[in-house]
Image (tube, rainbow over all chains, first blue to last red; front, side, top):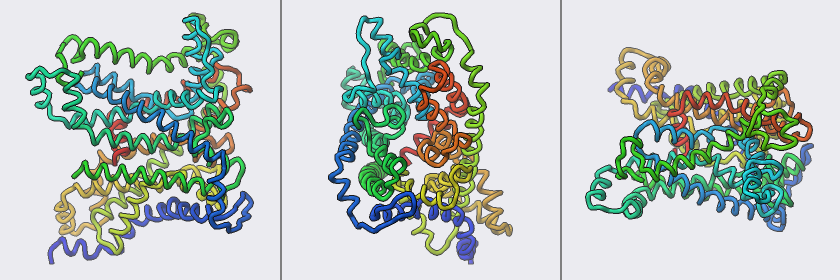
Length: 293
Length: 282
């Protein structure tokens, strides 16, 4: 009997002892609430323990609920506002900062720094950048002789205002992912292109972009999943207003569950969100698998 | 623009246009922070008249003095510290133990359990938070430290990371120790764990940051002001904006609340970048 056999052979109970503590936490705090939430979505339930099985009634209600439909639309619109902007800006920064030296490292640090702040600090800062009543942008416009823009109180500007805040907050991560992707490209390719006198523009389209294609896909999918879960910025900056114009799905869930205590109905909305996120995660998994092969 | 760009040693590898563009973008990035610091240094009554007064003196530390006199903020910093450190320690312990088991030990259902844990990576907070809130209500855990700490311990990312890391360590190390009569715990604690320090650092910093900045769970679990974390506390003061003593005070609070995490960032910048990027692409 080799050492390896004996080692593996008598590990039965020991394995459970080592993995047990985490598995208990996993089962009790993640799997159980997940299943309980699914069950909850089939009930009419309130804060006081009243519970009545209603099958798919909550889901039927969702489909015809104009507030929920508006929230779905807002969420998709917000994702469209932020993800392309985040992708393009962070790729441009990564291309510019993909070099050795302290200056580039300093700039990378600057662009990542906002990412470590909490959502409540970011919104606190940006409310007083965006407010037409003496905000930073309003001061700039006043100096240029222009009228202030009521970002957060205009239904057409509330989500763009929140998107601007979010792009400022979230730039760091996609930039770092792009930098990691750019590091994988062999330097000889650029040397060859430089010898041939290829322009920087052509080099980007012909060499860089094809070689970071997977990174690009991963960034777009990760950011889509993240921005789809917009919550804190809307909850703090606009409370979803005006007239629900900036209420995303997660804020809808929060309000229904923890303000109106219609928990069964909120659970059904969270299952819909879960399904959408699962779809994007599956795409991300497929994309990263391809890349690793 | 790229690595093949013109090499100008005086510009540290940047082209003039590239450097100008980056510097401009950095200025746009930093301006909101400078604006916040500027407002925090102005007397409230002056800001109420006109915020453009920020561009000239007089400046004052009055708003920071007001924060120091307000014990709530210190309580919130303390709560955040307790919660984030406990969560980090708990995640490191549970993930290392489980990672060792999944990478090195044979037990019934190991493969299936590991797949189940990996599937957990795809579960978003929104799908569990309502039922978890009801569960914690039934257990009377809201407005307690365990109530704020426990949910973070179930995150599967650490187990995934540690299992991968243990698998990368040559198995000959454990076999030699086993021949010397070492127990599994000795092998785990004395032989392998010291080798996982880089992964521990990455996981620890990532967990601390995520816990410190967590908003939704503490928002619904800690409803008493004395149990707020800093993140929730800062939100509550800006929600009550009309009742607070003014803009300069709020901005001083934003600066004050940023300081702890910016210090952590300055100390562990490389680790943080690696941890966050690693967690995103897992």
